[in-house]
Image (cartoon, rainbow, N blue to C red; front, side, top):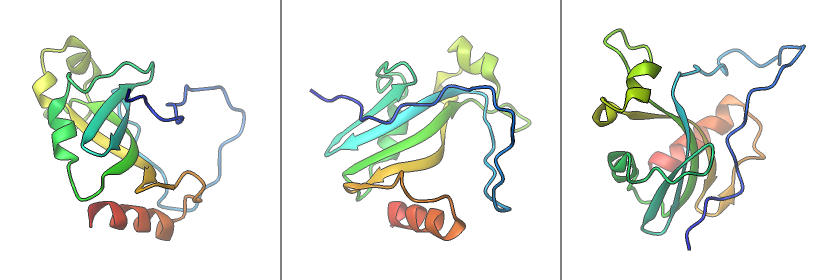
Length: 135
């Protein structure tokens, strides 16, 4: 049976210091549902933070991720963008706009059997992961 891999979406925690990162490594925080997308062969599954299988809820996301890679795990956010380009959580939560849901990815956790979680967030390494995924 297909089960999600070990990586789980993180929950927010209180922190007293700000992480110092090189310029250009800040990520946009979208107001949506966290999704872990996992492909194993021909099977692509979308899992919520609570391990609910949402593959049937957003099948076009799974369809859009059919490329030459048969094994990957992606971390992202399912969002509905308003006319101003800003994520509209109320529209997403209402389910009236499910047909407009997009996946905004922000991390490739594994690709073709290679665990990428140990790679430091440096621009050249992130570029390498993105290049490998889209080729």
